[in-house]
Image 1 (cartoon, rainbow, N blue to C red):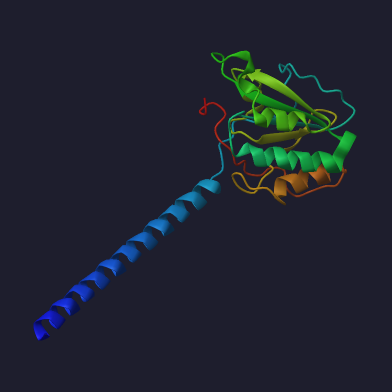
Image 2: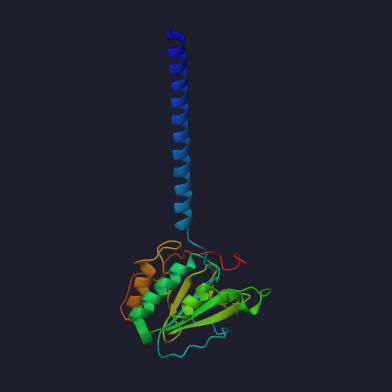
Length: 207
């Protein structure tokens, strides 16, 4: 009996050590995964050379009677769903005080309906928003857009007022600095901020 008891005790102790080790490994893995996810969500996208004045070679002509908001999007970017949701909120506040255009990137080798995704339809459903197809990213390059969700606000004279993102992180909806700056500028209020990080996938690397 003593030998059996000792053997069972040894097995139990070893099993306990194994379970403790497995729990420790699981916790470390979970922590590492959470850190990687958090780092990804809060990693800004890249931005190119943004013109301070409305580009003369763009196909989009401004009317000159209201500020113009231009947003560049990749039709397959999951992060940009939040940007479109925030755009909907912006238009709910601004209404006809703001002219809005959303350019969806289309690689030159893709069919014409490639951009017709749920993201396109969500943007098109927002009153006052005009969707465009940017074949080969030509317009994106003119405006220095490299990441999906990049927004630029120009005044009635074509001067750049703001550029950046309208979400606080990748795929995160809710109050954020970019949206608040745009709302203030459209209402004629001055702000101390003219740019924010943009959180979205690359415009040309998600094909």
